[in-house]
Image (tube, rainbow, N blue to C red; front, side, top):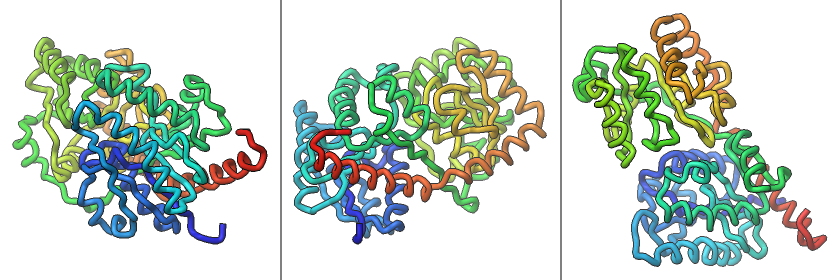
Length: 390
């Protein structure tokens, strides 16, 4: 192609607090722009104004869709479908875009003249439906699965997730690529001092075990809490409250460790940086992850990591983390105890973690994404030529 790629990104999900998917979008877009890609962003009425005002946001053509994603009337789901499956491809055709890419599970089923790419973040919601409401799960089944089955190219964020999609959804493995996520960390970022943070969050003087994770049952936080009674530590579980948090609080109380399991709500970035700095180790006990970005986030800050030996986590962690069986409370406890007791081991894990995190860059993600766009365009042209998907 002798001109820049013109790409439409379906960012209907991108609101102020949009979790890992939001990080994915906000880190990938500036790298795509650096590679010369011209971007049209399709967003909801709840799009964060700070994104538009950012350095990269000023280079993006923003199109606001007539929908909301965190609230709305009973018919809002129909509005969402119409916006993403009808209005986006119509706009893409008018703007003569080359590709429409859904960064979080949804892309138009029909987009005349435009190649389609969808990133299917994971299939956790199929095996663990309790992670969403029944309405949300139904929405994923109605939108995500058809998107994956009809897109010219499907992207997974780990090899483990790719293999799962091929096996579970019956996707053609030749249509599914892998674009791993990455981490960007400024070592000079301001952080709250240890003494102040311990006082603010009432952490006491014990060593801190940190787990930054959504409070959902598949994150396996219950077994992590069950490991605490025999460890002289304070466990910190920051993040927005969920219904599952109440179950976790009751469990901590029943085990007699309510005073040593702290549930801070949403923290300022300086406080979170301070937690990483003072933590004796970071633990992610999930049964399943699409990628496991929290592991890289901790490694990039030099915090020793222990995590599950399941799904994508060994792929991300490599030899830079202590792996354990997430189904075993004893295994979780022993991994934490080893890091606490052996400071040489902790130092080695921290050093390896810094090296491991540095290997995952957003430029690498962007380059793999552009290659996927080119593959999708070539496949669409071949389809037009021979009249059938190959």
